Image (cartoon, rainbow, N blue to C red; front, side, top):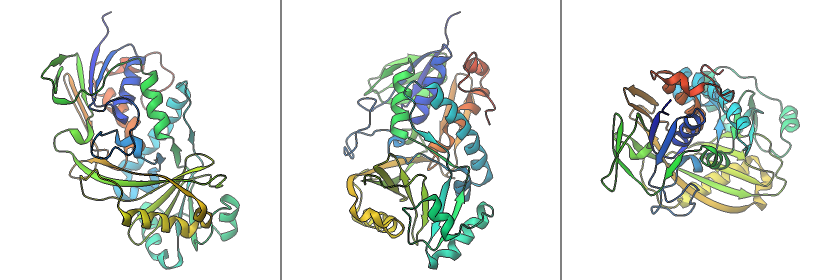
Length: 355
């Protein structure tokens, strides 16, 4: 049989996940993206726009994120955790994935704010000081702590690189997609490319999608000892600290209504590092490896949208939930296609309804 041809506009998280899924199923896949190549380009602010997924923390936190998106986001997130486990097992590169839960911490004066958040996401039992010390000996200074036991994390950079390298697709770098329509897309050089199906997953490059600025700090501290992500309730932010390796940590939280791609601001960097240091005193000796900023793609209601027409699929608006939602949204989009079931034939790594 003649293979189904697919054109994907966008080589971010959704584009790479789709390319990997569909090429493994025998579809002929071409991916177009304005980036100069597949890897991240940290530090090239405003000049080259690497995928927002490279900057993300990789926290898979359905319960914590239900504070922003409700139970619908949490349900998609729970499905995605199971799907990510299957994807990682199927990848030869085996990027890091773990499910040890995550911690919510609060200083004494912020207990009220923590209780309000916990009321929105469902009651969680508070940990005693001794229980927190047993879980994470490197943490000190927080008066209150709660464990969200089913949450997970994934290494975004390693996963994005592995999906691209192992997809078996044709990658067209430095090719911006200007228009999409059922069965065709038009690139910046004026060429029209025709396919059986087109997927529009351009993120902030798509119409009606705004960018929401996020900023992160990478720190190096050998043998830091943190084994699971944490969120600290802060007067301005939900500051998170994510262990990426035995010596690397990622700090983040900022969410700014701006499409400014410039460098991280002094205020953001100071607030993030001060908040993290207040519960992890050893960070005083950490070294700043990198400051990074990027734009998250968001729609007006800050919720994702999947649209399936004959010959055209649009998935966008993942906002702050990209890694949490991507596999479930791809699953749903493919299931709604007339020939969508072919995308899973013979593939044990992922199947519809994965839960």
